[in-house]
Length: 182
Length: 364
Image (cartoon, rainbow over all chains, first blue to last red; front, side, top):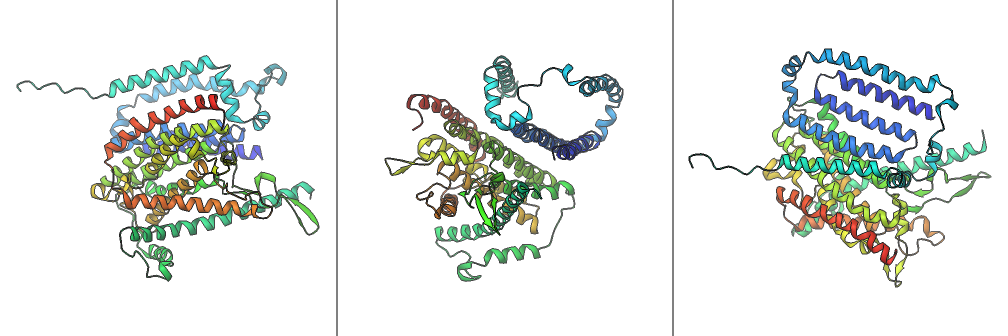
């Protein structure tokens, strides 16, 4: 059952993320990206991590992508896409370089568990899917965040606060300067 | 066939029956809320309202449905067809999905039952509880679903290729985003007191009475959160005094301007689905859900909680209609100001106060 769900949801994730890359219209890309995020949430659910899954939906599918869509729709990027695409033709070459760097990295990540035996990989984490099913997900995440990972957590919060202050500063209304001659 | 599989099949059948009955009743109620709203608005404004089709207008929703089916299906020529058609589907699906996690009763079926000489177990997957899916992150699920609903509005606004639609869609989604935040933060006080995000646990926590009279509902325990959540949920469902999605003197009918026939009906359905879901959430969070006197009585316990839940929910729905008939519309910039400068800080204050009070007085 788990394998079946994984294959179905993983298939949807892969196909929709391919569509994200190969769609001509930025709007359709964004819509398929939402589908990708939703199916990734499904993958987390299969792993028994319902808290992460729902947070994935709220934060990425619900909040981040709404802003993406706002920008795409209000700027009406569809009309400008031809001009925009011809302008950035040299991106192709950079893309090849990036792929050449990333493919070995990803390949290494995928092949690690296959190459080594289980004992060489080290002990499994405290929260295997079987354990995660028994304890309350949210409580487990919260207690880890506020004990073992308190420093990274606080640093992230401060970083976000800095970003927020920066955005407010940039977006504030500039006081109108009196026009010359008035 | 192994013995335990028979139990699983029995539970699955019960779950499917539960979903089927729930869906049918839900759709019927949605149709009749439109009638209730129009009749009550009529009474409030000293006119009759629709009372011609059937006794007291009881067949009006069915007549409306048939009329909607007969109307011409128009797809605007400049519309982006895929987005235009997908929008009402997303919106309706999100509106109906909220109810999956809301508990409407306690135990609706005996745990074990003897059928044909074999004792079947109905407790697998909470099949005999009065909730379709008792998820332990239910509160988050609700906000996740309502954040997906925003896409329906944005897509409808953009896909119609109409300035007013786009403005309406942007307005509606901006309001929903900002007020969803306030609604979610208002609930945190309740999660702190209950120590769980499952709606079933939240309802069970509201059992009992103070001095034998006042029920231990969260509207008394968390009065600030109650008021804030009420305001936020009004804005989120797009009801008067915050109904900027169809502010007809400014943007025609907002995101649904270009929709006709059943697509328009779907938007209408989703709107009332949101109202019903919001009322059910109000009841679950603040009015004790299915709690009430005699819910533990031997036979009554199977249906009394459902009746309590329905009565409480219909009272909140009536409140929604009442407010619509009473208050004029807000101004849009004031709405945003209210959301970000008053509601949000107030919910944060509530989050600060709750643990302090809990530490001093314990859980009352």
